[in-house]
Image (cartoon, rainbow, N blue to C red; front, side):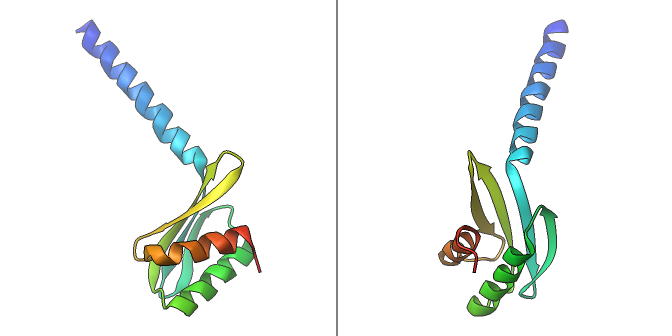
Length: 99
């Protein structure tokens, strides 16, 4: 019984480290609905929000999610939930080279 409890505590600790470690790496999340930014989490610069809306209008993107994740000293942008992979580069470029 004691071994089972120890195993559960160890597994819980490992899970917590991975869960909170991943959450700390997420810089921001943007939700897109109807081609407009409808929600953000984290520190999203207003200029980037405007760039995202311009890209959505340009490529007729109706919905999706954009996540910015810290990777060392840089921030990588990933897309999903309705945004085609071929448009991902536009969102990364907008982050790397703001207009």
